[in-house]
Image (cartoon, rainbow, N blue to C red; front, side):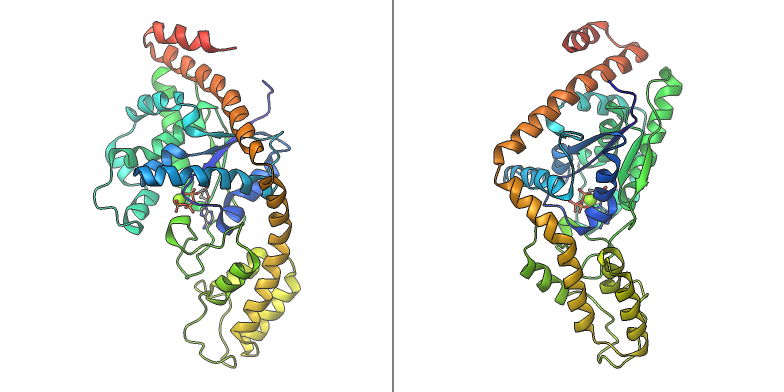
Length: 346
Ligand code: ATP
Ligand code: MG
C-alpha cells in the first residue's frame, strides 16, 4: 500500500452520467487520479433506497455498465483508478450497522438532501434504508479511509455527517478513522434544462454525456430561458440565475470571449435566444465529441467492464476487511469474527 492519500466517491446506478456529474465531481476525479489513490464506487445498495423493485434492480445492471463507460469516456484511467460495485464488498454493511449506533434519527432527518429526495420523488413513507443512506455513504468513505471526497454541493452535508461519525467513533474507541473533506466541483450544482435547481438523473432534466448530437440539440432548444423575454430586442439579464442557457455557456463553452460577447448583446437586446442556444449547441459538441469517441472505443470492448469491476472488488475487499477488523478490535467486539476477517487478509 502506498502512502498516497485516498479519494473515494461514487454514483448511484439510476441512470447514465450527465453534465452535472461532470462539472460537479467527475472532472475532479479525473484530475485527482494522477496524484492520489482514487476509488470510484457504483452505489447499487444506495439505489435500493428509492428503487427496491426487482425491475429497477435489473434495470440498474445496465446502468452500472453505462456508468463505467461514462467514467472511461470522461478520462478515468482504470490503471490508476479503482472502480468497484458497492454490493461486491458487503463488509461495508457491517460498518454501516456499527456507525448507525453513533447517529441519532433527528440528526439524519435534518439532512437537506434527504429532505429534497423525499419531496422531489414524492416518497410518502421513507424506508429505514433511505434514512441509512448517509450512514452507508460514510461507511463507503471510511472503509477505505478516504481523506478527500469529490462531490457536488448537494452531497456536502453527507460528508459533514461522515466527519461527525469519524470523530465520534475515534473519541469513543480510539483513533481509527480520518476526517474526510468534501471537494466541491467548479460548478457546485448545475441546474437542469427545465430551470430546476439541480440537473438530476431522476428528474428527467439532464443532458447525458452519452446523448447523441441531435438529442443534445433538441434538449438545448427546449432549455429554459427568461420567460419575460418574448422578443429578441428586449434587453435582459444573462446573469439571472434562472437563465440556465447562460449557466451552461459559463460551464462548458471554452470560447470565453464568445460568452462575454453574447452576454453583452443579450443585455442590449441584440441577440435572440435561438442564436444563444445554437452557439451553446456548438460549444457542447466541442466538449462532448471526444467523450463520445472514447465511449465508442470502450463500448466495443464489453468484457473490459467486467474485468474492471472484478479487479476493483478484489482490490477493495481486503482493504475493507482490514478496516473492519481494526474497528471491531478498537470497539472490543468478539474476537472470533476478528480472526475470520484477519484470515481473509492477504
Ligand atoms: P439521482 O437523481 O438518482 O439522485 P443524481 O443525478 O443526483 O441521481 P447521484 O448519483 O445522486 O446523481 O450523484 C452522484 C454525484 O454527482 C454526487 O457527487 C452529486 O453531488 C453529483 N451531482 C449530481 N448532480 C449534480 C449536479 N446537477 N451538479 C453538480 N453535481 C452533481
Ligand atoms: Mg442524487
